[in-house]
Amino acid sequence: MKITAENFLQHELIGLRAEVEESSNRDLRGLRGAVVDETRNMLVLEDEREKKVAKAGNVVSGDLLVSRPEDRIKRRG
Image 1: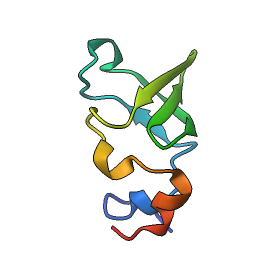
Image 2 (image 1 turned 90 degrees about the horizontal axis):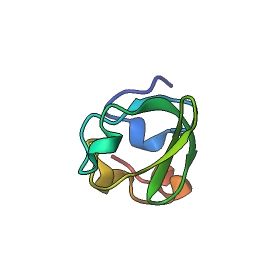
Image 3 (image 1 turned 90 degrees about the vertical axis):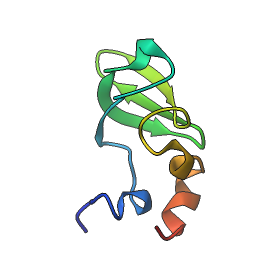
Image 4 (image 1 turned 60 degrees about the vertical axis):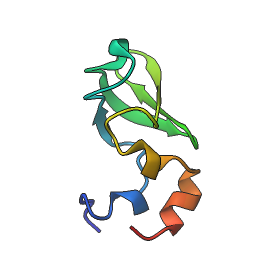
């Protein structure tokens, strides 16, 4: 199944490329990398090094992503 804006919450995020477009932490803005790990509240992005990014408070709909990956995949939209 192709990942789209409508169904990405039901997919695994590990392995996808991501960029922090806006964040309350200025140091994280523009950070890019592959998602190498995911917890209930954090994404770990890796480019040259690993950087932890909180799901809440960032442009990615953090409130929708805040859950354990296995629980989020079970939810519908």
